[in-house]
Amino acid sequence: MSFVRKLKSQLETPREERPFGSGWLSGTLALLAGVTGFLMVILRWYPETFSYPEIAFVQESGLATVVLRFVLLAGYALALLSLILSRRKTLGWTALLVSVVASLMATTQPPVGQAPQSLYFGLDYFIINVLIVGFLFVPLERFFPARSEQTVFRQEWQEDMFYYLISSMLVQVLGFLTLAPANFVNATADLDAVRAFIVGMPFWLQVIVIMLATDFVQYWVHRAFHTFPILWRFHAIHHSTKKMDWLAGARMHFVEIAVLRGLTAVPMFTLGFQPEAIQAYLLIVYFYSSFIHANIGWRFGFVERFLVTPRFHHWHHGSDRDAIDINYASHFPIYDWLFGTHHLPDKEWPENYGVVGDTVPRGYWRQFLYPFRSDRQG
Image 1 (cartoon, rainbow, N blue to C red):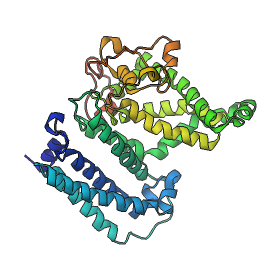
Image 2: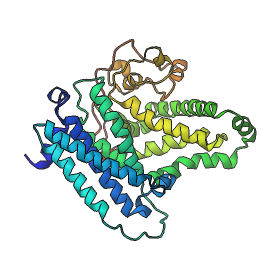
Image 3: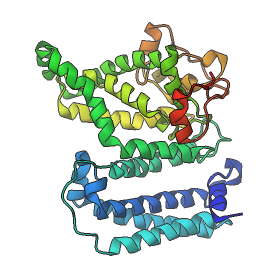
Image 4: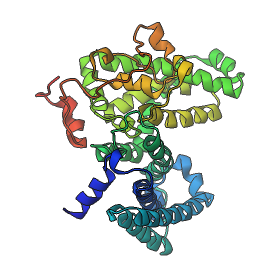
């Protein structure tokens, strides 16, 4: 068995074969830390190319250096712990090697900075995604799974991680497309009275109103992607995952991302909300999207009546007969109540996930071309 296959096999070890104390969790987090540290070093070398201006302050403040040191130390410590605990050493040795390479690269002098470029890629955006979201949800899915038989690194996890990478690296393009509809509305509509009313709201109320307004638009855009065949071709990619976890939400066709974000952002960027309220909303959505897709089996009781939870959204992704075309809201189930698409049994979870008929191919590029194919099925 090749080294790569051994590593993949150990990452995808079934839950019953990796009890607590087996070294699997420490090795997985060590590899995550090592890869994160390696990418952070690449970012330090080429900030003009890979830095997202909206979060450039992280680099400039010196916080990134502190985080890099912490991440690399965590990589070393967790890798050594995995090597001590685990009988299968591939994961631990790989994590240790990546951490060593990243450390050696960090001690070299980065190239002299170049002039700022008009084109950039959000490598730092991807790093923050992996570092924060990954370190949060991998342990949660390990200890509180909705489906205990599902591995944290399930089949097709590499594919969804690549979706994560692409959407992060193309943050500049997506940002432009997201703002385009809002810029058009701002240029053509007279909303001064509405803006004057909203700007007088307290900060916390503005955040709630943003969530309500964007979720209302998102509900109907999402429902349209299920209703019209030409749109379903793109949305089927998102539904093609057969295992739900924190990575599953990243699997979205580029066209759908542009349309969904652009239209959903219209009320947020046109009604006069304070920038701080918008940033707070974006931070909430950032974690919430991963949360509702995650393989977390927590029960929320009466809260499920008011907020979308993993169980509610998992039903939307189900391929069971009862799970077709339901639960379109991303934050507030009341929209599904009002418009007749709410479905949430007392305790049950859907039996299966994915697209009925399994018509969507595997692989990023095949899925990217799938909506445009004339021989497409389903």
